[in-house]
Image: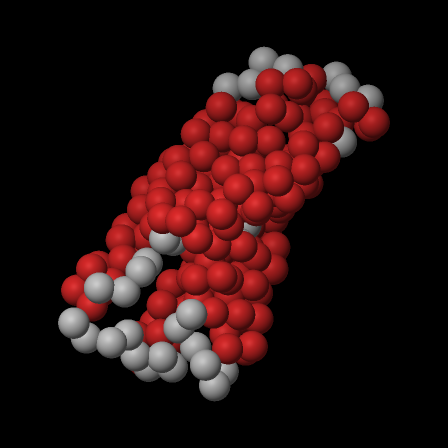
Length: 199
């Protein structure tokens, strides 16, 4: 059995994949803010009620971070990532089909709790095992994926909302998450099966 190489080129490759996954998964935190004006107008909701989706997203993200972190400790990183992919894909598709603000908010709670949360805490915890000399910078870079997400997604989503509407934007994001995330999760687990190291 080959020992996992700490600080190896593979560790850096794994960090890059983790940043990409975090940047994709972070869409749940940033999309709701961009979509709210259009959703609020569509559902004829007042400003106070319209904050419900964001509130539930953040509560879900906090609670989900604990749940997904515990799951990653027990089962490795791949299962939380696959759950996160399904939750993001399903949540965004459900949001696109929402008939009112409450169902939209519930979809975003799913997105925050089991989607975005799965691509933050578990990834940072996992990457910390692959670095020794540069562990601090590796964890910081992994965390930055979430903020990179904030630099990319709002512009893309706003553009789609302006041209095709908020429902199409949510549907497109959901499909993208379902297609893009599982292969990236597999990329980080295949070498672990060869070396016997936990994912």
